[in-house]
Image (tube, rainbow, N blue to C red; front, top):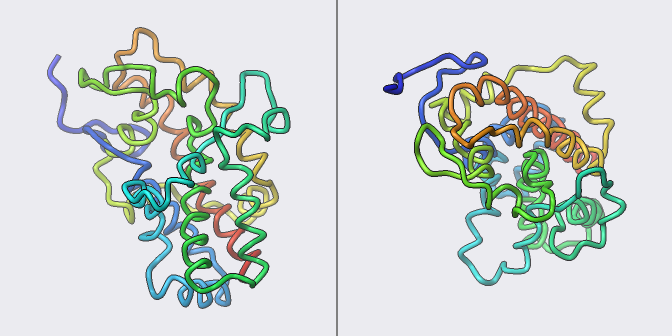
Length: 253
């Protein structure tokens, strides 16, 4: 069956794509910017030297080609087995996103960093809050966060991790500003509820979507998979933006 040019899925026009890597991260950054206190916004603008949170949100991926930052390779993710808790695996040397969000938050709040250190750590924190909300960045043992699960995305070779990182979001054909608008504006009560949770809660929330994420049948994914599960990605990006704002207001606001 020939693929249609556009189809409406959960309010988005869907085609083919790439995603949480750039568009999704920047959308969460923009959502966070809109929820900052004036004090936090002013301080962050100084630290980032005028760059927006949205634009620096992808910096941690961009530096992967620079061996200077090889030590951050395992900061994007963690591994929690089915039925496990983060506390059971927090010493896991192969995935440090939870512990690094906690540590960097403390370091930034200390006020003891050089301008360069603070700028770099802030950019990393912004990115990692987005990462931990992507369900496959809190993976299960054995398949590298879905990277080893080969699938077809509209008959094109892909893998399950890429579907969640990229394919579904890019298929919206939305810019990051359009995506941020399309994700909606949570009410005050919802914002308060989401911001009351902590980073370990965020990790366990990602685990809670595992059954849906791995519901791939024979691995031929497309409209039906997006219809059923893209709503999860939308909620997670919105939560990431709201919680990032809460974290930054806590540090700088």
